[in-house]
Amino acid sequence: MGFGGPGHGKLKFDDDEAKPDISKALLLRIVKYFLPYWKQTLLVMIVLCISAVLGLLPPILIQHIIDRALPDKNLQLLVLLVLASLGTTVVSGLLGVVQNYLNSFISQNIVHDMKNQMYRHLQGMPLQFFSGVKQGEVITRMTSDIAGIQGVFNSTIVNFASNLFILTTTAVTLFIMNWKLALLGIVVVPLFIMPTRKMGNVRWKLAKETQEKISEQNQIIQETLSLSGYMLMKLFTKEDTELTNFRTVNAQATRLQIRESMAGRWFMLVLTTFTSIGPMLIYLYGGYLFIQGELTVGAIITFVALLGRLYGPVMQMTNLYVDVNRSVALFERIFDYFDMDPLIVDSPLALPSSAEGQDIVFENVNFAYQPDKPALQGISFTAAAGSLTALVGPSGAGKTTITSLIPRLYELDSGVIRIGGKDIREFTLHSLRSQIGLVTQDTYLFNGTIKENLLYASAGATEAEMIAACEAAYIHDFIMKLPEGYSTVVGNRGIKLSGGEKQRISIARVLLKNPPVIIMDEATSSLDTVSEFYIQQAMHQLLLGKTSIVIAHRLSTIMAADTILVVQDGAIVESGQHDSLLADNGMYRDLYNKQFQEKASAT
Ligand code: ADP
Image (cartoon, rainbow, N blue to C red; front, top):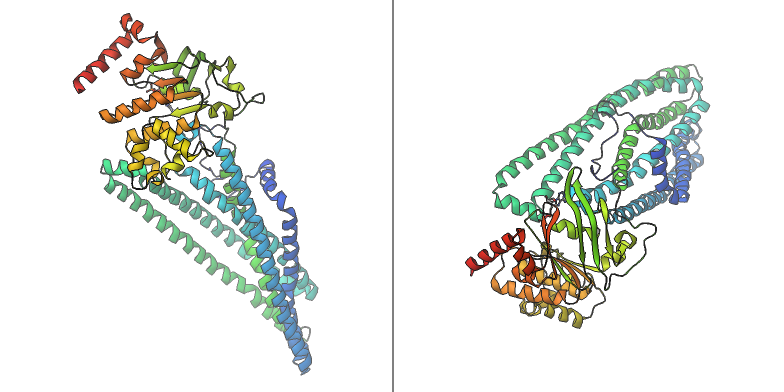
């Protein structure tokens, strides 16, 4: 599966009836996560088995109290039986503690393993995935979906095993005690299987609808109360619309949740009525046998007590398929993500290589973001080692796309990009990307201190190196004027800094990393003259002696470039140096004149 549909966790059964649709392969895949913990799982099963047997003892001991200790007025036996009953309860409790520990150990470790696997997997996903996926979905997948897996072990697997053990041990005991009464007790079982199934389905449907509403609600929260969503909402004064939206969904979710819990209540009412029929029959027929002298009082009481241990598990197991389906759906939602192809991975033959002092060559490169809508067509050019190549052209021409292909943020469709004569696909991704410094317009800073942001790519750099880089990027003085200097926290995405400041910090960051190749998208946002001057100076320092490709918006950059490529509609329409291009009287001249006029009118 590709990443076109970042798996919206389609549940594999229809709405009316929760029908299992679980393939062997899927089951095997799920089991694989449990395998590392098979020893602990086995231990849980043994504990459950012992608990099931121990659970039978108290009712049997009561029978002996009633039928032997009391009629015989045997105090010693009475105390012994009571103590034994107490002992069983204590041992059962202790076993419960052990089982609880094992349950958490297994389920939390599976969650741990999956989270690591998912994080690693998502790191490998291409840029396209993150631009396509809904905000917050990745976080939901990583947190609540995976966290839900722990419930699978606790509530589905352990419950099933526990019920099965209790059911079989109790049934066997009942038949040994009195097979006729046992049959009578079991005869009513089908009575409550039907309503349990019906109600299970209703609850399952409601639970599913509730879940959908809650994700819808989360979506609204994430979209409107995140930094960019919030700005959008405020700027377009959409608060009222969003509030109404939220309120509607919230009200629907609340109604559904109430209905879901009420469905549970009716379900219990019906079932308690049916489950009381069994004991009544036992009292009736058992009472008759007692009058006939064939049965003791203790036996009747024990029988009824044991019936409860029979009905409970039957009811729970009737709805097992709902739990199983829910669990499998959860795994499927997670597997959907795992199955998305990272697309851009190291080829088996990839080797760490160096781009130091090497030419970057595009040979007839074609690329499209969407099928049938080419973004780049037949791009060929050479960015000589140590030279400055400027990309100019109207917005949407494909300049950013050209630069994105070099660090393989996207994979080209045909043609080849070479560095030092070697196809970039022969480089390991790590070696390729570590040699490219990227300064984008939308500078990405995380919410930490300036220092943390600077050292992100070069953890080993010294304080002196960091300051030198900032001085070269003409940002040191600015930083020092901040109240907390390099320890100033920049806010989400660096919101507390201006565009020009952010870009200079980003330049300093790349200077610190000191890669042989620089890709830069000059800031277009209208900078004041002082900012512009500083950025120019910073850029000059950055590009010194590097192989650089710059998306140029300023005349000074364009004029200094060794090669200018004019891009239009995904193709290079002109190339050369400033003077010759200007003389050509083509597109470049138009762009130049336009900028020149803008600059003249601005000053
Ligand atoms: P420029 O940098 O020259 O302004 P871009 O390289 O950003 O142009 O865009 C070239 C074309 O590709 C545009 O038509 C743009 O809409 C489209 N495009 C850019 N990024 C994406 C993307 N992530 N998905 C789909 N289309 C895109």
